[in-house]
Amino acid sequence: MKIRIPYWVKIGAKLVLSRLPFGYSFWQKLGMFRHGEMDISTYAIDVFDTHMLKAGQSGILKGKIILELGPGDSISTAILAAAYNAKAILVDAGSFVRRDVAPYRLLAETLRKKGFSAPDLSTVKNIDEILAICKANYLTNGLQSLKQIDTKSIDIIFSQAVLEHVRQGEFLNTLQECYRILKPKGICSHRVDLRDHLGGALNNLRFSDRVWESTFFVKSGFYTNRIRYNQMLELFKKAGYKTEVTTFTRWETLPTPRHKMVREFRSLTDDDLLVSVFDVLLRKNYKQ
Image (cartoon, rainbow, N blue to C red; front, side):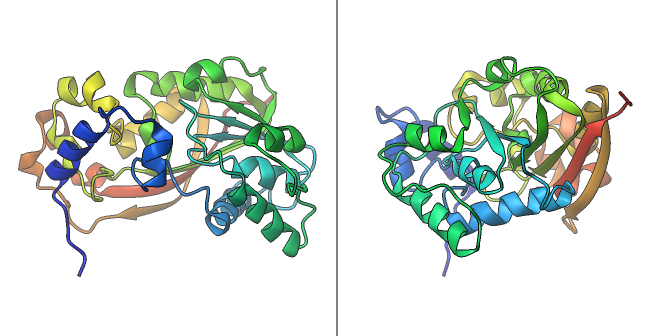
């Protein structure tokens, strides 16, 4: 029987654990504070293929440059892009990837068994060698890293449950930078998870902006920007994108009582609050 841990216990535990004198790699080995599951071969292949299919790019990736926003614990996209004769740029807010090369060798082997010309990683000793073989770049300074990328140089941008983690104050700027670096006929594919990442409800909406956006909370491993569905769509539009929501999932009823939320969220409509996950395609909203 699975024990359901209350959200406030998870918050308390992460507030304490994140202050202990251990690096991210230590918690990563224990399965805590993980940044996604892209270090699992089957998951990485499925995520990559799904985004390419949704973006209408499946089978036509040769020579293209693909940017993954928030690769988390893995540089798997570098290997996947290389297997399709494309190049990858991975941009994150820190260096979180696994340094053990075994998972990447397994991914390359899995791809070769599927008939792809995946790079030979049998002799690599570290991820820098893998990135070099794949002709990929791994940038770890978030928004500042995006600003270093050439204008109109990227064919495809994708992310898997990442946009909700971008700092609220940097969200629009991040969208605008992605718009700048995207080629005129480029496309973005994003999956956005609007749940609280504390158990899949809306318990993050219980806190005031002053508390939630404080450095103390932001650096504790459970931060989401709390930008709701309709507000996020408006920000996509403001950044210049033509937006196409391809799928979305809704709760039947609010998972967290409305009266438990702070005022700014309590006043939102059910239509806005009930959207839990959605997939969206973004294109430049003009002709060049």
